[in-house]
Length: 410
Ligand SMILES: [Zn+2]
Image 1: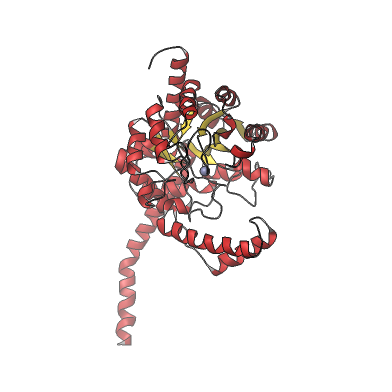
Image 2: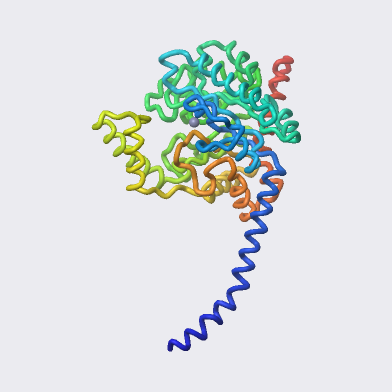
């Protein structure tokens, strides 16, 4: 019997080898194609939390940095051309004040990147800037403001922030503010948008700032869709289809309406946005961790808390989502409304240690492109998903703003 196996096993292996070799070479051809494509097309990512990360701990992002998900070297490696730097204003600023000041500080910081490292970075305030600077090899820094709190009840601040380079505003963040209800806030004070919020959307249309519906409640989303005269974006949201009940992601009905209005949903890479099982586990573990920290009078960020978190993670390993999950969300939008209404809004530097395997930082977009090629997406479709769709919306928002300013009725 042993002799039989000794003879038959090499025979089977010999028969299968050419098949494995063929598959391996097909994979390496597609991987090489993905690398080339990543450099050839314009990749726009609408949510990268670099400014807040550097506010907490400054690093020279023109070089390879040991921490964080973004720096120039890795951006070039991954083919990232136009990250939107998130001008993130924590929700508490609505109560404490100082939101506008913080926004100015963070915008100053992004502008300073381009002064400190002029060969690497350039500010982009239009799709034209993105395209021109792509040809010249720069990483374009666009800016989006996450939370409308810095508008501070004053519509003239829309033009002010436009002049400072802001090209989208996420109406609210983790708590409801004077503009809109938040998906994370159970109080739902406005049952959608406030009166001021409705006027703000109209003013953003007129000035030419994209309205970002990520983070806001469902009621607020539907109200935005009633008020807006231009397409809107969800700068970093995924599909609720995969995470039922998670209001921070978009339902199929909302994605359909967003697409009907010509907008785009930019898929968030955080594992809890991609997979329900991960989200449930994270919630359970979060309760345990919070209880421990409370019992031991520790706060997130304390060195003792960090040591505890490290040991907790080692004792409770988690399985992250992976790059195929991001492709599944893209597929879902494509099946629902077509290839013209989906893009990428990774939330790099914003979702901590929850990024998917294969998409851990900005050097890894080629892995996503590979996954799309493997699923049969054509180059022209990948171009749209990786940036073309967002640039189309941005161009349209600019065009309509010019028309409105010229007094043409829509
Ligand atoms: Zn966010």
